[in-house]
Amino acid sequence: MNKNILKKMALASYTKNTLDVKKVNKVAKSLKREDLKVYLKNLKTIEAKKTVTVSIASEDGLTEIKKYFSKVYPEKRLLITIDPGLITGLRVNDYDNVYELSLKSLLEQTVRDSND
Image (cartoon, rainbow, N blue to C red):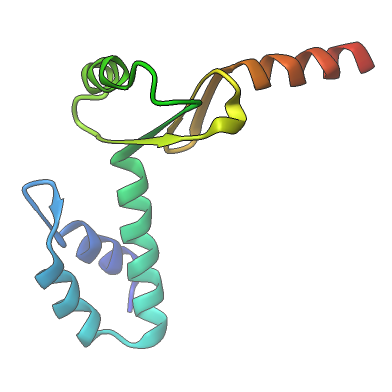
């Protein structure tokens, strides 16, 4: 099946900007294995574009962070994760864009700059 048709089918699998499980199951049952892989890949890409992941070092200020990023990305689903490895600060993943403002990032950049 044509990849453009599979992409359109993936886009049509949404109802009111939410993935419709019934539509996905109906389409999945009718596709061959190789077409199903392409269809699922398209769904995964669409979901990634609709989601912003914010990683924070601890739960301190969680409410304010949710409120702020909900205003910055009003059309996207917000997913907040706790990553103690950041030490302090945050990392924002918006599909292909990654913004990191953390102590860990600053320390790694300082080490890289001192080695150059």
